[in-house]
Amino acid sequence: MKTIGLIGGMSWESSLEYYRLLNKMVKEKLGEPHSCQCIMYSVDFAEFERLQHEAKWKELTIKMIDIAKKLELAGAELIVICTNTMHKMAEDVKMNLKIPVLHIADAAAGEIIDKQMKKVGLLGTKFTMEEDFYKKRLKVKHGINVITPDEQEREIIHNVIYKELISGILNDESRNKFKKIIDHLKTRGAEGVILGCTEIPLLIKGKDSSIPVFDTTLLHAKKAVEFALN
Image 1 (cartoon, rainbow, N blue to C red):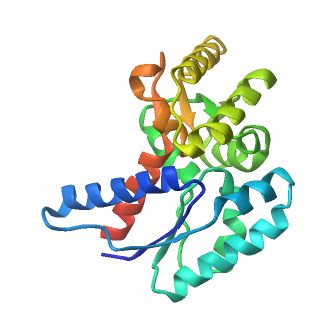
Image 2 (cartoon, rainbow, N blue to C red):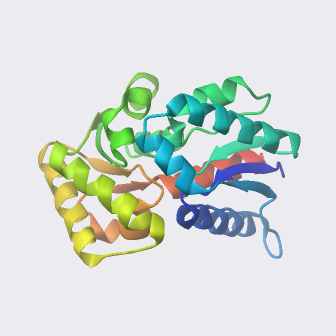
């Protein structure tokens, strides 16, 4: 089994879910009492959240590269960034390592392609929904067209993530707002929807959506286990 290096803490609520899923999947594949061989570097999210909203991405990139190098030195054989937004600097991180970085958008794309879908909605932070680093990768590398909610809906999603989900607050009113946003994406032609923030699957499950959901936390963890065991 290869050792998985996890960059976590963004937020720890979803990093906890990564740890649970990785161990559960390894046990399912190898049997009791197997568990995942991994190292996690968990950051203080207050600092990272502030830098994100101040658009200090160069500073964040330096921090992410430094963390990944520490994991590599500690014995990690692959890197998993436990957040969609911070894949904004995934390629920069990758270029500074000798070990692979498993991209979360590629994990989502594999499942979307398996379902033979060509057009999907994307929910996430405003950074993920509005910038190109995620949507462009899906389009250019995988041929998947991505649509995002309108401006007001993006604001709702972003606020729920940063004001509720990162603190483990699961609100029925917020869930209903997300359901309406997904329904709106469906009317615009979305065949499925990417839960493109690792906290969103804590709130939204398949039963809450009128179209198939792609849980990036689950799919990313699944790819990491496949890589680690092969």
